Image (cartoon, rainbow, N blue to C red):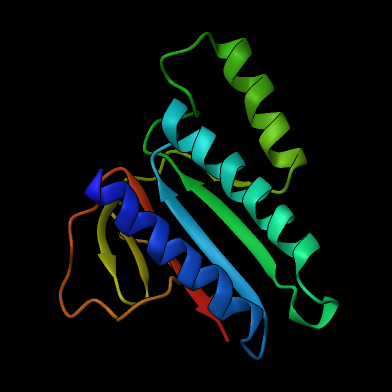
Length: 144
């Protein structure tokens, strides 16, 4: 419960600070693409839409949601046709899907993959002072 409350506080702070930032953009990377992470991505979009309606147009910001999955597809526990339909629906809503990419470290500048590539996906909060092992969940940064 404490983790969920801390996540909610960080997310609320990131949303509100993005509403007042210069470039008005927020990118959220979610490591993993199982049922929980897929649901989180849609909840983020719905929360952003609800907040945007309440904000003055000058305070609205763009939200980029990226799911990063080590497996070849999202929702690995479901039938392939169900996962493909979900992937299409997510893409239609603007969620970016990155598959076949295993995240090794979460850095202050983005995500480092086992393949040696580097994903510049930014998140808010203090920069990481060291490499952190990813856990399923999300990281975000305000672009501004």
